[in-house]
Length: 204
Image (cartoon, rainbow, N blue to C red; front, side, top):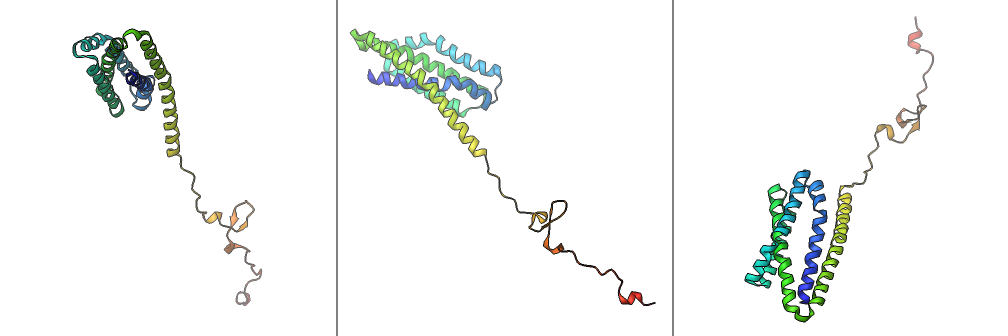
């Protein structure tokens, strides 16, 4: 029973790690329309709440342990589709699988606890609610931390420090001119010109 409670806590952490930020991921990263995002979230909720009776009947028919394992495996597959799919059909199938996994897992876990705890059912279901609440609190916090780490890494990857540019001809060291721009050394000081014409010009 302890292993089942730990598993329940892990499932809750994984679920609340993804679902609260799913709308932000679909809107900002995949640039999905609001109608598609609402359809994905609605299909997941409908699948989990509407198929719970199917999960309970399957647990009574095939036993709790195989249905719990099937629910965990389906949720892993659904989260992997969310991670690697960017099409509306893929995201919709991932949402349906996520809801189906919850519909299989939750009633099977409750039935298993009721059968195994015997006269300690109150304590067992108290611990079950406690682990579920811990997962619901830890999941969004962990998701927020991962989003911040991803944001910092993407910002540092996009930042490039400015490179020093090589000075052009006007920026070379020289004497400053009246306009404030440096003058090259080859043109300073100015050559002195004799005010009188050469002797050959004076001969008439």
